Length: 371
Ligand code: NAD
Ligand code: MG
Image 1: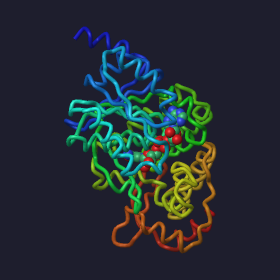
Image 2: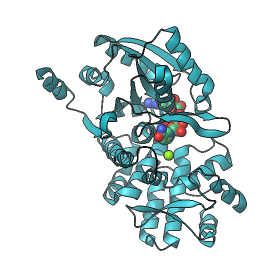
Image 3: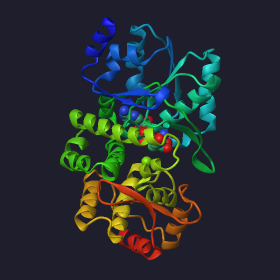
Image 4: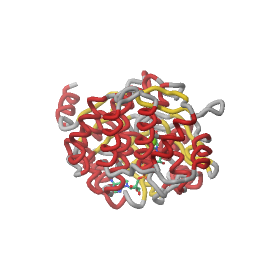
């Protein structure tokens, strides 16, 4: 017990949020320098044997130090290094993880540790869910998007040639360690993409947080540690709270798709990889705000605030001209749609949202005003 007190003191710099999911509950710790905090690593990684899954971009940046830190607290470590990129989030590379685990004769007490962005997190989590029917899994997200979004909520998986994220599992990690220091090496464009999901959390749930983001957007883009830590913490709280109420996406969780119906259409219309997901979501939120305004759900000031904040985050606010029919077709294939009617997550007012169908004339008006 005394050890525990000392440990908590040594972790003092960090803030921990408990994701309340009954027996699948786990802590998310957020702060600076966490990957060099032996007390934290010791308390969050239970097993003796650890296999780190990462990629060719992240490994040269953080793998050596993390390995050293883990070895210093008595962990036996090995690494599996995958190629970098969304196009490698597939069956072949998932198999490479299993190949590695079997070749290393890993048993079911081995902890799989995901060190990287959302691609590595999703793949590693899925591998952990399936290897020997489930082994311990810890997330160390190193992109803003992964820290505020993909590492929280337990969705794991890979892409299929016929659809993104179509093969996967719900599988919660034992812990998430979000070290904001790792964002120092993140390209600005990736940082902005992560900010889209931060803005989303404010827009749909918490107008006070939205205002805080407006007031701190320059600090966030300048990678101010305090600002980033707070943005990650509040985002995780908001997402965790939604996930706690709807772990397996029965209903409420769909609100996290604010801006995504338009965003997915942009991503697939332009070809995946052209715009980053967060860029498409940023523009999609501007469009969803426009539609909310046309329906009388938000006032003009709120609509303008959203557009200005998305722009200030370094994200696009003008939609690509895909052609009206293509736009409609692409939105109809969005997986949230049931019974042919496109459902939109709209604001009412800024800081809360609802899921609704909309008259086609209003949707067309938004499309015309957005391109
Ligand atoms: P990513 O994992 O591809 O990372 C973006 C780029 O940054 C990559 O090149 C990566 O190697 C590099 N990188 C990572 N950390 C870095 C660092 N600290 N310094 C420098 N470079 C770094 O992309 P992402 O935006 O993190 O995640 C996108 C993925 O997340 C998608 O596959 C998406 O489907 C998934 N996702 C999952 C969920 C979920 O709930 N599971 C939610 C949202 C997104
Ligand atoms: Mg998203």
